[in-house]
Image: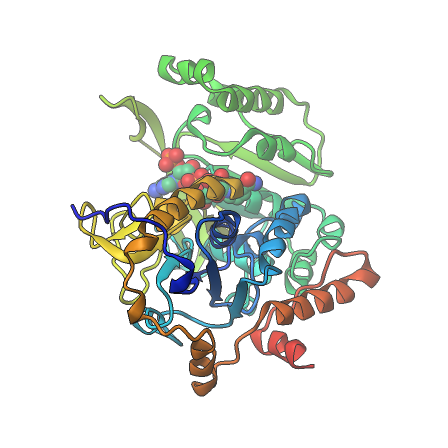
Length: 468
Ligand code: NAP
């Protein structure tokens, strides 16, 4: 397969290497940062982002009560302030500007668009009112403009969260956490108000496999047990492990720690707190039940684990069923990538096919010169924010190897050409200075209330702040 031969880096006479990074989340910023850190090639980076605001899931995904994780934006701002960097927020690639058009202005494109959709369960009732992907609930409480106008029915006592990852843990915690505490965070104002009026008191978090197979991390799990006014429970018999699961405890510190924390939860005295989180394992949703189009319950099947030849322990139904009443179901079974028009896409994995960051025509296909990929759209929705750093470094390494083989004639050398094109089309793009105005305004709105910021959640309002 045709991987480009390593070639000498281009000489200064070629002019700077012009790179477009599409997506302003952690993967995009780590890519720009890695390009600026190397000395061999003179690089200019233009970053395009569909929303006016940068930082991707650090702004729209990280839970509002995990403020310290957001400190990573300081690293991204160092890149944002670099003279070699320009930000074009509020520009949709594949919408306002096609990938083919972008290729006229840049030697290299890097897709850093993340995973913007969610996986489906494929069970009856999934689309009833009151059944939502957790990813949308997360976007809603974090003030993502796409979801700011949604309503979640929080009028029922019990909510069920399906999934055992960190997103499931986040949404379960947010549903029962004290609103006074949430009101001191940067949670979107509309979500604080809705949660103030919430009648949800019981959250059941459902894992299809056992506690040793859960993908949540220990610090996140432990936090359940520290929430004021919340009782966390798990039945002791749910923590009995088969031999293969027991072996996982010995192999992986995280699993061992998780089981210790769960054992602590199982042994706790009942406090009578009026908000609860119950963890249930080895249960799969089989149907979301409803009346008049609205969720009323969830039918689940008990599972047992079966170990395959590859050692993977999968959940197998036992034929025993149970129905749990609830008014809200949040399906937290993973994010999924979305195709960009004109760019290859692997439907099976929900990623852009690639070889260590070089985009290919399809899985195992030929490399497409000048097109690269980083982050979740490269490897799938896994890992923490920092995982995207080595991931970006790998892709950047290949970009630098390929830099000498580019057809530089094919690209308009004038950096203002893309700006003129956006202006001609009437696209109101947001620069990094503009973003800083939005940022300052949000902080100023939050400050009198002791909050880190009060988020602006409508794009028109963001653009209004930029124009002042
Ligand atoms: P995840 O860790 O992949 O969890 C997905 C969960 O969905 C798994 O428990 C999976 O179970 C379950 N699942 C999948 N299909 C299912 C089905 N048909 N029925 C029932 N359950 C099903 O993904 P995530 O929670 O969306 O998180 C994405 C990434 O972001 C992760 O790497 C996560 O650690 C990271 N993240 C980190 C933080 C943090 O650091 N605080 C916060 C949020 C997210 P199986 O294991 O059985 O497949």
